[in-house]
Structures are given as structure tokens and as C-alpha cells.
Image 1 (spheres, one colour):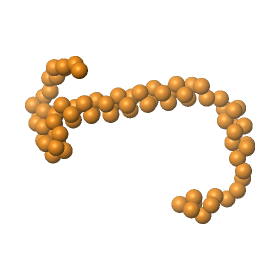
Image 2 (cartoon, rainbow, N blue to C red):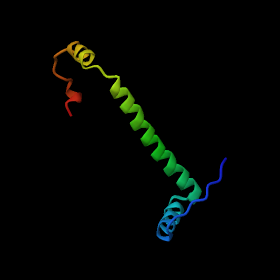
Image 3 (cartoon, rainbow, N blue to C red):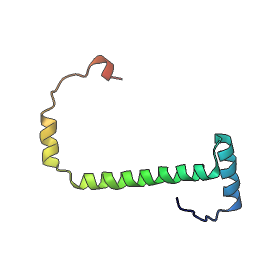
Length: 78
């Protein structure tokens, strides 16, 4: 594991401590979780951008053409 020195404004540190206490976890755990969430969001965005670049409108329309033109089931209408 790696140690990281982090400078935070007092107001942010105070709120961070309050939230960690309310959640019953350490500030370190809260920061780890927040960083992991942010990284997952950014990595997902990168993944989706890469997938979108591989898209092919002709293939998409061909796939849609295979879908039956029927009314949805009652439980799917909500």
C-alpha cells in the first residue's frame, strides 16, 4: 500500500471528518471509496467512448430491421 500526503482546506477536512463519522468509517476509507468511485466513472466514460467509435450505423440499422414490429407485453408498458 502507498501513503499519500494530501492538503485539504480546513472546511473540507471538517466536512469529510463529519461524514466519515456519520458513516462509521475512517476518513481514509471515505477518501479511498471516493477516489475509486471517481476512477470507475472516468474509466467507464473512456470505455464507452472507445466502443462508440467502433459503432457502425449500417450494422445497427440491420440489427433493428430484425426486431419484430409487435406491441410490448402488458408488464413492459410501464
